[in-house]
Image (tube, rainbow, N blue to C red; front, side):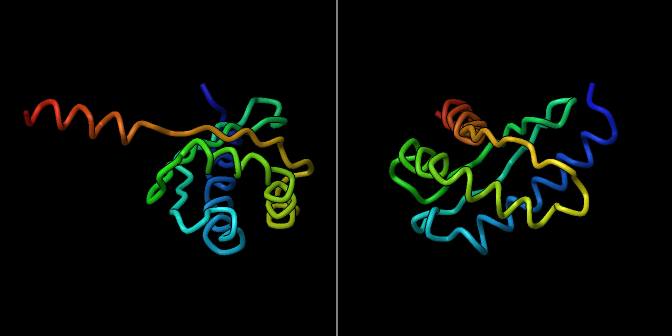
Amino acid sequence: MESIRQDRINNLLQKDLGEIFQLEMKYVSQGSMITVTKVKVTPDLSLAKIYLSLFATADKDALLENIRKHTKEIRGKLGNRVKNQLRVVPDLNFYLDDSLDYIENIDNLLNS
């Protein structure tokens, strides 16, 4: 079970990362839409698992790899935003959130 502090940091990071991808890192998205669906921070606040939903892209794996290449830059921009709330910015690990694809697949199976 997550503590209240972890939950607040999860929400803070999700909001700020979403804004970073939309406003400051458009060149990384290559014209596709990136949505931060979930953030999970470890209890010691040293690692954050970020789940992304990628839309309007043909190759999601290539886009995710491009995002991972820019992790240091994203972490730096995040650090500038949360410097008053956190002492240390957690390390960022990006994962593909395929829950929407899974839901769509189930919906298609139910309709057929």
